[in-house]
Image (cartoon, rainbow, N blue to C red; front, side, top):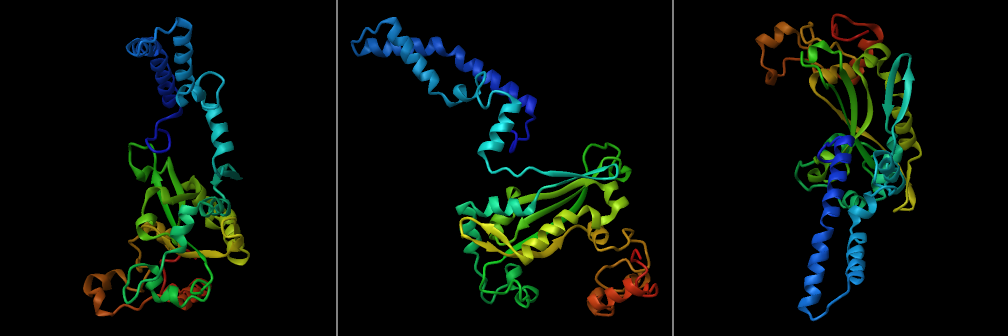
Amino acid sequence: MQAILHVSDSAAQEIIQQINQILLFSEPLVYHAIQQILLEHGLSGCDSLVRKIVNAVKESNPILTMTKDGEPLSTISRRASYFQREFPIVMPIEYKLDAHSVSYVPILQMLQKILNRPDILNRVLCNDRSVNEFKTYRDGTHYQENDFFNTETFRIVLGLYVDEFELANPLGTSRKKHKLFALYWVLANLPSKDRSLLQSIQLAILCRATAVKQHGYTDILRPLVQDLETLEKHGVYIEQLGECVKGSVLFVSSDNLGAHSFAGLQESFTVEHPCRFCLATRSEIQEKEVRSGAFELRTKQEHDRHTKYGDNNCTPSYNL
């Protein structure tokens, strides 16, 4: 109810209590039904015998036995303790940046929990590359020319997604009062049909958008980057495989606004050079077609040069 239907803790507690009441109210009906069955088979069971049978039926009901007073699922706090004790839950870590709070779900622990499930590990290991077709990232030249990923050794491939969203502001996202920043990740080794499922998308970082503006991505993403460095250099131990498996981030996806912010570009699209892929100006975009090839593409080398020397003639869109 809580994880899939998004029912609140208090509502779930009320539902559990009402279900218990319904089950307890059904005891007289169960008593009468057992009596009738005994009579139909020529057995005139005494009252104490029927009561014992009714109690046995009641005690065999998993809802009643687990949610009655004093049992593991009877209250909100007891359920939380039970889930942490019995299920592979990874609790978030909260750290402070001045007055801002940032929550981080350790990615190495999450990978261990996920890949120790045989059903998921089998899907990850059996994800073969396409032949003469372009179906996944494995068929692209960036992946195939990457020495770290393109190897016979199993590698963990991660995809990141960054976004900002508004939770409860009826005035719209432009107010930014309640806007949150979130960074999600997905295990890209999974087949496409599994990777696109909502339960395959994991949360890594959550904080207020104002914290990102004030402290920058370096401070906000520091624990994630440290874990990613550990994953790439030393790997994470997978119990099902009995060995440490290395991995890294293959891609970062986002909407236009998130991509510009994450790359250190101006978030306004009314600047002179609004495109993160090429060096076209606002006036050139109005006059020329993109497919004509008239716009010079941005490159990593040019990007490094522009950010180092501040070449405003080419990249006034950068936050230098």
